[in-house]
Length: 250
Image 1 (spheres, rainbow, N blue to C red):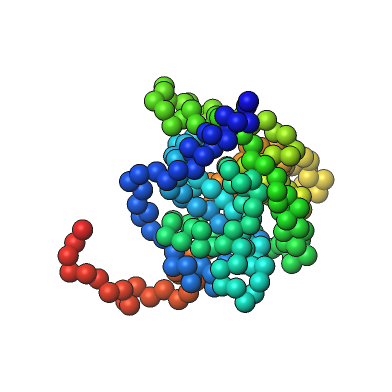
Image 2 (image 1 turned 90 degrees about the horizontal axis):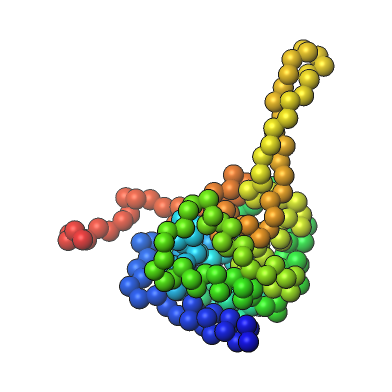
């Protein structure tokens, strides 16, 4: 019964939100040339579920997927992103799925090719997993009028899913993949004081701790100090002098 209602809600959440207009979007051809395997593609989203996620995270980004490369190099629209979809679970989709939407590339820095291969292998092994329907039940509640949610609770609201190992949501799946090679995203930081034997002075030392993957949201890859933000328009050789401005101001 729970799964039945979960899927009904999931299909409702996957409907396009009326009135959505992206402030900016990346040229699909430029995106295709710049994006690399292992890059995380953040998506603003134009679905009902996007409204809830953006509200809870106070962010532009409502969805995340990982570029793993096309299945067929000759097919220009071959599935090349792995994502966790509310209805279909963990699947592979083409870049064209997000054409016309605001997107952002977040690239891990300093990761060796063999480590990226491990991340991609991890994601490929999860294809077919179901989306966590407990998560959709929680998200659906934020589409209806209700008292404001305190900021300190919003992140935890996204971690209210069942947490079963056979289920996933988009950002937790990606967090697990990168944590599998111990790559940092947004670790918690604590300090300890150690004695410098040479000077005899106390030195403050930062200690990083891995945050549980269920607490990650799409915006975390954007604000993480360990992922480089890549903008295809700039990377493709942007020159503002080549812009053709219209005479009418909007």
